[in-house]
Length: 164
Image (cartoon, rainbow, N blue to C red; front, top):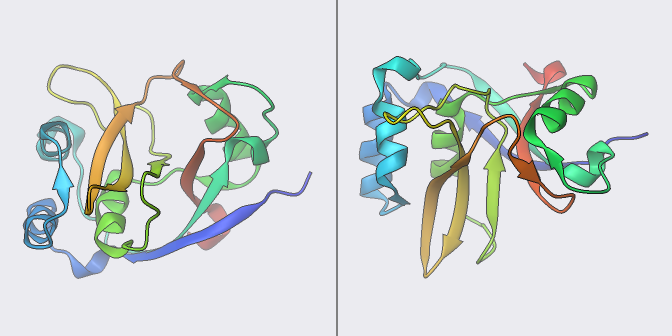
């Protein structure tokens, strides 16, 4: 089975010195983020730091991974690994929001981040998602527990292991 990937965006994290620098830029550009996003990224237990690398990111539909019905995040991540896809560090998702401006209105794009890499202060795991609506760009969160359900039409942002 041939995997169908769609080029998403290139991200160079070296342009940012810290997570606080990213939040300053999000505010300057009037990009909307929730209290959860700030809580998770600034939570020292998560140890989210700027990776200082460049990434080519791609979108992959759950159906392209071979799923024809709803499936769990753990199963999706297992299949991504078999196809040579890499999960994306949380810092990359935050910076991708700063780089990705031409998003369709009403669309939400989830990032495939490692499980338990983005836990809020209540102990709930999340993954980031980007959206556009009401004339604004957003970065929000979605649940990231192994048995969270996703559907064939959902897509995720990933990297290719060969690119890293």
